[in-house]
Image (cartoon, rainbow, N blue to C red; front, side, top):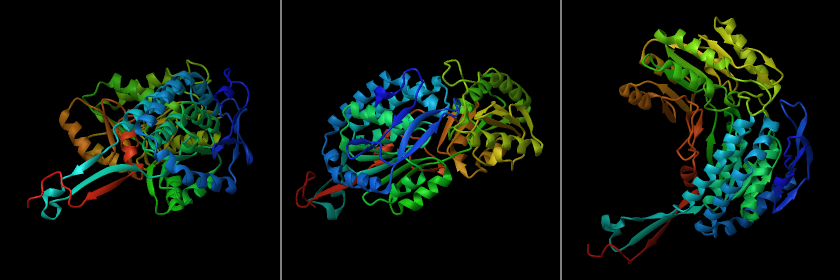
Amino acid sequence: MLDAIPATGNGVTEAPALAAGEWTTVGAPLERTGPYTREVVSRTWSAAPALVERVLDFARDNAGEVARMSPAARAGILEKAAILAAEARERIARLIALELGKPVRDGLGEMDRVADTLRVCAAETRRIGGEVLPVAGWERGVGDTALTYRAPVGVTLAITPFNAPANLLAHKLGASFAAGNTTIVKAPPQAPATSSALVALMLEAGLPHSAVQLLHGEGDVGAALCAGSGVGVVSFTGSVSTGAAVARAAGPKRLVLELGGNAATIVCEDADIAHAAKVCARTGYTNSGQSCISVQRVYAHRSRFGEFVDALAAEVAALKVGDPLDPATDVGSMVDDAAAERVVAWAGEAAAGGARVVLGGTRDGATVAPTIVADPPPDASVVTEEVFGALVAVLPYDSFDEVVAACNASRYGLQAGLFTRDVGRILTAWRELEVGGLIVNGSSNHRLDHVPFGGMKDSGFGRESPRWMIEDYTVVKTLLLRGMSIWGEES
């Protein structure tokens, strides 16, 4: 499968499914047209109901085989996969650029993160353990011993998004395998070949066929998998609306949902404006803003508002927009024309409400010119909804209490940024902001793959990072030894 990836970026890459240990091209064909090239770049096949059932049956039948692998064996495979990910970084990054229009430099960075994520998964595999419980501290426990360990849940379902198709697949599949589970992967329709390539890489590293299966298709395939009996955990990353559909289809199953956001970044009056503008420019348009924590709302103190807008505009104007396969490109295309048109329309809506479009507001096909909207009304879509595109809105504020309230006046709560030197404000923001994470002296768009990541409110629940994901992918099993005590038996 890896050898089938065109090294030059030319040609159509086939993305088969992996079912019951075999690569298969059964099903209705689906073609992916690159949003920048406007040509077919990959081809896959949608899973029919019979194939979905075959995959579910195989997962249930083979979960025990994976669970019986030692943590050391699983860790060794994950470490080898990290090495292979580093070796394949250029070819998979090019494939990401073709399927998604994501600049190849960002794809290379994503593949570096894949390697890191798999190394972290390997390390966390070696840490899985349990507890000796202090049962003898209570009278009814005297004379007994109780122990726990974290056991695999069995079958997990990983539904991955298009915006970071390699790294988020590495998180879900890597952590699930680390925990000792078999995993069914439902790939995003926009990045089928990237998904197939990463699964092939994991198999090459030694992942047994009993540990992973991969299906392609639209939402109906995902819904059928969610509803499948035997699935213990459903891990989904994507939009709020789709997340709600996943929850309905899954029913009473354990869910890990990492959903949308309209992330806020606060620039205080004591901030280094030049630094804040440079960081917001770099992280507001990475992957054309198609990240749940991309810089969307920047609140700058009114005394520095004009200075910040000017500095941000200068930085954004210097970004290179164009061919995602060009190593010098900063901003490529969005996932499709419809997404690009939505961003342009929302910029126009804000302007009609009195905002000033400082830069951008136009598109060429699926490529949106990096857009800055200054001082939009608080009810504008660019403020209240998730833009998920190459647009940053900048708003003034007067007091810190006011800006915290403005940040919280959102149904989302994933991550926020804060530029200040004031420790009191930092602690206040950490306590008061209704978000899962706060980045100080950085924008909202920063993530380390080995620290917990996730949101509040409509941004979902659960934390995506190998250590915390392993907790979601395991169950606590207790052993109680009656009349056998390590604590002594005298009451």
